[in-house]
Every structure is written in structure tokens, then in C-alpha cells.
Image (cartoon, rainbow, N blue to C red; front, top):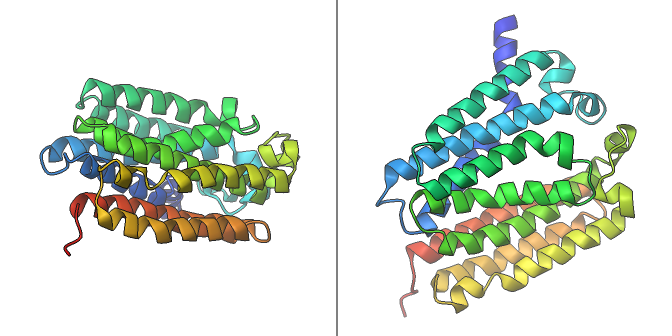
Length: 282
């Protein structure tokens, strides 16, 4: 029973759904770049490296955040005693090693992106998380870079680069909303997050301003001829969902950030549709 509980705790540390989603987003980046079918091994290696790196980053974040989680997330594996802090650290290092092995098989640009991301993942909690807005920007860049990494793995970062920018802006908004949700625990630990530094409502408005930039810029791939009609038809409802989610965060941050995540998935699907069907038959 103890071994099973520990194994379950280690799996929970990775936030497996989020890690797998990150891998899928890397494959989407490769697909939008037009190289998923031409270079499936490279795309697969990139996706695998992303899954391992995301799981490792989540595990090491729980290691550093174990005291905060005793307040905000007492059911997490370390606070509830399923995994020891030392065990969580060793597990994250093993996952990082797996990510490095896979990333080294990729082109130089992809390796460079992987190195930067790994450094940011390790340094995030200790150096960036408590800096108002900076920690949010780091997480946003990491989230958006999954698309860029997938494109770099197959040798094309043009279209995935646009997706990276849009995803980073919307991720920044979601991270600000999550900080509003976690104000009590963050204040207890002395973290100076954006909602604590400038207030919860002003922080939400900063996040919404970034989201509006992403929404206004979202038609660009269609206007530049990079993606077809289906992209535009799919991205408009995705934008509506994200704006609605951001608005609801003023009264319910937990529901707002979850709904925003759904809108972001819809936006990623719009890129897939735009690449798969460039023109809607008349």
C-alpha cells in the first residue's frame, strides 16, 4: 500500500494531464509548421521531451512550494505525506534527465529552446515566482514555447511563432487569475505576486489587457495568408470563450481560470483546422 501510495504521489507531482497536454501542444506546433508528417521522429522526440520537462518542472515546483501548499493545496503529495521532499526532488531530476536525452536528438534551435526552458523551469520558484508579473511572464513564455519547440524540431518556426505569442499572452492572463485565487497562501509565505503588489482587481485588468492584445492579433495568421478560412471561423468563438472567462474571474477566479484554459484549447484547435483545411470549399 505504501509503495502504491508513493507511486500515485509521484505521478500526481507531474500533473500528468497538464504534462500530456503540453506534449500534444508541441505536436500541434510541429503540425502547424507543416512538418509533423515529414519528420515524425523529431516531432515525437520533442513531444516526449516536453512531457518529461513539464512533469519535472511541476515536481520541482511542488518541492519548493511545499510550505505554501500546506495552506493552499494541503492535498498535494508532499503536504499529505505521500512523497518526501527529497523523493520529489530526486524524481524531478530524473525527469529532467529524460527530457535532456530526448532534446539532444533535435536540431540546434530546438536544443537552444529546450536549454532555456529547462533553466527557467528550475529557477522559476526560487527566482521569479515572487516577483510581481515576472513569474507570470516566465510561465507564459514556457507555455507558449511548446508550440515554438515543436516547430523548431521540424525546422520551421514561422507559423508556430505566431501561435507562441498568442498563447503566451493568454497564458499570462490565466496565471494572473490563478495568483488572485492563491492570494491567501502567497501572502502568508511573503510572496509579492501581482495581485498582492497592486491589488486583485487592478491585476485582473492587467491580465485582461494582455488577453485583449492576443484577441485583436488573432486574425493575423489568416490575414497574412498563413492559415485558411476554417482558422478564422474557429478562432472567433475561442476568443469569445476566453473573454467571457476573464470577465467571470472578477467574481470567481477559480472558475475563470479553468474556463480560460478551455478557450485556449479551442484557439489551439483553430490553428490545427487552419493548417489542415486551408480553404473552405464554396
